[in-house]
Length: 189
Image 1: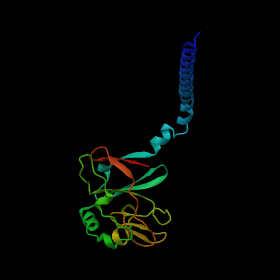
Image 2 (image 1 turned 180 degrees about the vertical axis):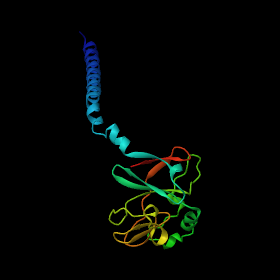
Image 3 (image 1 turned 135 degrees about the vertical axis):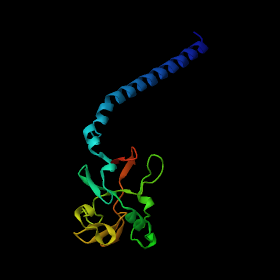
Image 4 (image 1 turned 90 degrees about the vertical axis):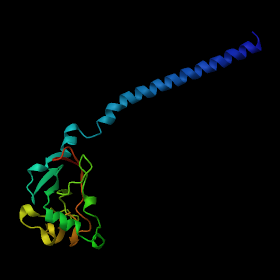
């Protein structure tokens, strides 16, 4: 055999060998991923846990000026149907003077058509001071600003869930929620 022929065989042999190594490595990686996938998926929350981390609320059942309290994953949430007076009071506040400045509109989520439903306010039901559950209109006490009052340490929230007085450092958080229809919302953790 000539040197040119031997060189050609060696070159082709290395090319084939490289291809076989690459193909074997790719097959191994694919097999490892196929075996690992079920183990990775079991680390996520189960379907019943995911279902317990959200709730649908029919807001048409809430009377004007009233609220309902919803527990999702052991955490309380307030869904309040505000009166025209409560909405006007929330919008009239000079936001620059608040400890945690936020406009009323910033605390609302648009409906499916993009408009804000100013009557419905959804907030966390845990005081931002130490996590107590404030009382509100359903319990007959709305505090000094018509919203919620935490009797444990004296935090007062207004009709938009903003902190106005007391030791709480932040507004009642607005959870993740969306409108499924004009009167049905889904709150998620």
